Image (cartoon, rainbow, N blue to C red; front, side):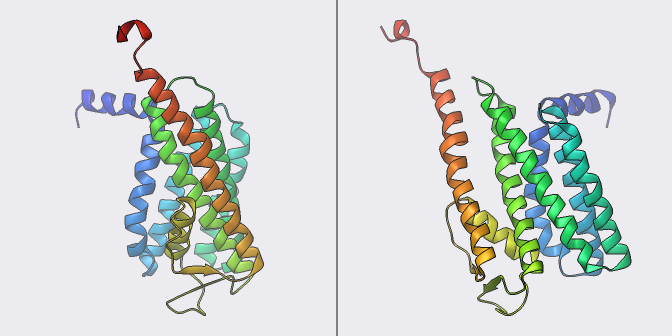
Length: 231
């Protein structure tokens, strides 16, 4: 890669950090099924999670959010994840996932504030809309993971109904709820799980109603011809 190409990539990254976060998260959807089945895959899963956390921190640093809050969530989460993997302490995963969920919620909130503060739609805001959706999906999936570890039997499914749900199943449930489709074979059973599911359903409806509809409205206003142009 020559110098000009590297500079172009650096400029693109500075202009569209949300695009990189969105691409990495969408790539994770394709990679997670492969990474869940083997020990090496689970190690790669942890490394991939750290990459997403780093990108989330980068996005927060570019926004008007309070950076120390994001760092205070990300650093302990990485330390707990590494400790859980190295020392094989499952309990540490609960707190790691709890902190990761908090970081994704905070990052999603900072991106929503970033999109709402402007009165014009830029390409980076469109990428931010997609990245925010995936951040919310990840945040609730981590919340579901914590819920089923604190309250075993929180979720059931058509396949192996008595077993704990895998990460891919919880992420699939989260995307189904957030999008309003609801097409999932994973079902909340305990009241705590159902409460989280209802919160995500509400978040999905409000995200479409407030954020996405506002971006669409601003886009229409930008391309609508002035009255003089219609004469």
